[in-house]
Amino acid sequence: MKAKVIIVMLLCSIFLTSCFNYIDINRVIFVTAIIIDVDEEGNPILMVEAFHSFRSNESNTERGNRVFYESKGETIFEAVRKLNLFSSYKINYTQNRAIIFTERAARHGLKEFLDFLHRDQELLIRTLVLVFMGDDPKTLMQVKLKENEYLGLYLYETQENPAVSGKRAKELLNTYLNNRLKGKRVDVLSTCSHAINMDEDKIKLSGAAVMQDDKLVSTLSAEEVRNYHLLMDISHIGLLLLPHPVYQDKKVVLEVLRGNTSTAIELKNNKVILRKSINIKTTFGETQESIILDQATAEKLEEEAALLLKNQCRDLFDAYKEKGIDLFDVQDVFNAKYPTVDIPNVVEITDLELDVTVQVEGSTDITNFR
Image (cartoon, rainbow, N blue to C red; front, side, top):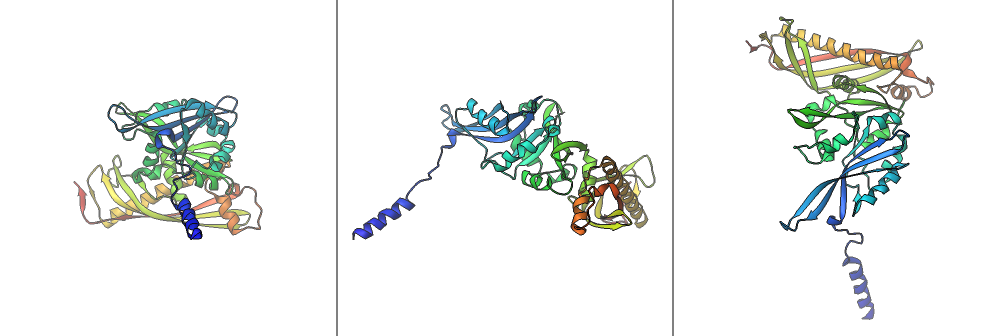
């Protein structure tokens, strides 16, 4: 009998207990966005946006405040701990949605910050990573966004907008941690900036920051990001503006619907040939003047679009080849095929061969606009 009682008591002690580390949500401050800057000596400056929940005595309801903190240290971990000197409750990072490096910090180098961002148990590795292109990062915190009060949540949601995904380089922390070690250690991060639209504060996300060895070495415009995505088979979305086949001072627009890019590489006569085959399908989106979408017109538009993309992609590749920056992971592709061949910088002896095919979908025998 005594044995049964002891067993029951042990079971109760195991299954009838509460959470050992429970903390009331009103006694925690949740970070939603982190901005990392550096001073003139290279010491990190940390700014965070956070959510603080509290119970209103007036309405007897739960409410939340958007609060901000800033600290500075010799290391990023020290700066994080110093933030708690300005808070009545513990600052928690489990709900953080965006890590934003300033342009100054990106040019200084991200390497010394990455270990903590990866190692800390509260920080999520699937957090959005961006570079802020601007002089004063505090302007980001001061922006009054009507679509979402919290900067971190706004940036995270905006990156999911499929309509403009082809013009920015969405990157999560875990992806960047992997890509920064591949090939010649080149990767791209999305950029953001403060903008005014219709007299309202906005955050503009377009273009990309080119990172090499964790340092900002160049930037890509929105159109260059689209071409980068095409060459890397990341995204096949966007608009192609072409001259009208009859009225050369007018434009027609094709919308890219989908596509794919295949890659091959060959070492031949001490030269490396990188072959990219881009196949995309488009739909006729707009014309500024009357057009008859017969078969001949469609074929002419397809040829013009293919030539436009071919020239733009080649110009982008050649520009970064001249800079000695392996933007397109040529080294990684080459090493995978020729693991025993040692060429320190493959991109310097690489020529790009492009085959671009564009297909215009939809009816080709209907007068679209008169």
